[in-house]
Length: 303
Image (cartoon, rainbow, N blue to C red; front, side):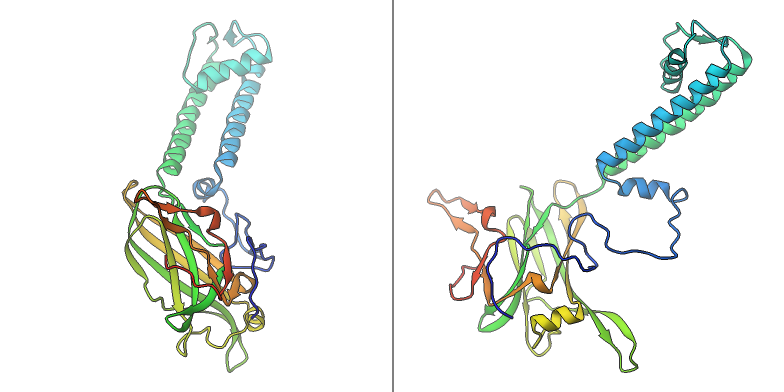
């Protein structure tokens, strides 16, 4: 592998188990999605903007549907004459506002109001539970370096990745798992995807408040021993980093993951140092250099 220097790595277009960004790179053929039976899970997985859009659209459609029913029973609502009146009467009924100016006076209209009130309780309870669950879910704000680098550490080549806690609090009892996903062929000629554990010099720390550089020794026991960039590309190697820890502020366990493919692994390079001790005794962290690296000629300071 040849060394190179760049600030950002372009995203790979080939499939990867842990995609960069929010794109789903797996196409499932013959797979049932069970949208309605698993609706709650699907809506929890939506981004906030999409969820709000779905809730607002469903709310408006529900009121339009009931407004159409009320309009069919014209005369059943006192002081309501136009379709707009029916729509806003439906809004008042579903939200149990009841201003009192428009009231149902016919049996069928009262029955419809009863059904809509029941539907309103169910709808708002569902939305409230959904919003509370999304707000209360523990989330990690862990920053991973765009690339992994390979350079010597204590006289031996090591694979290095950098991560940082983006919040100002602490993550305690942090554990890291590093795994290599590799496409291979068995002796019987069967193509398989296999996971190989990559040992770390240190896989646990008592707390993560600033940054941490992960180190995997590339020796005879490492699945990466003797690998070239061409071989990594050919095998479709993907290195997966998983982190778990206890967030002191949230009082919950949080998780984060990231992955690197062949062209995101830079040989004969080291990360720029981002930690400095200032004259006033404070520690300075320069996140502008977080993803930057240099050829292995210069001696970096340890994180």
